[in-house]
Length: 159
Image (cartoon, rainbow, N blue to C red; front, side):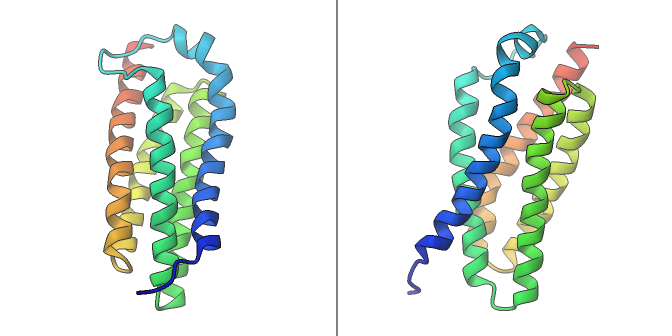
């Protein structure tokens, strides 16, 4: 059994949590006024659910990236997988910026669709290196499918 490189593991988790923190700096000011004023579908979870889910998802994402990092035998394959991971992480923060920062519901939806594609490609790439890493991203994919449906519903309810 391979020894865990704690610095790398916590580094990957830290990067993911920092992405979440960057996004939350845009979300927090927008919730009480702008987001609260939007019409939302009946399946919108309470706000506290988002915080818990995102913390768990960012930790899982960090662990998944770490597993790819340590199991990627071929450097090019590993680098490509981590690059895709980085792209989806940037799209994740970009969605927050477009939706909450710019108050652009339609633009947020378009970014969410791109994020779905990027996560799917990341899972496929991760699966070639580490099945466990790919599986750790499945809850994230499912949450983003839900979030994209929620974003689309908000677009329809707020013409």
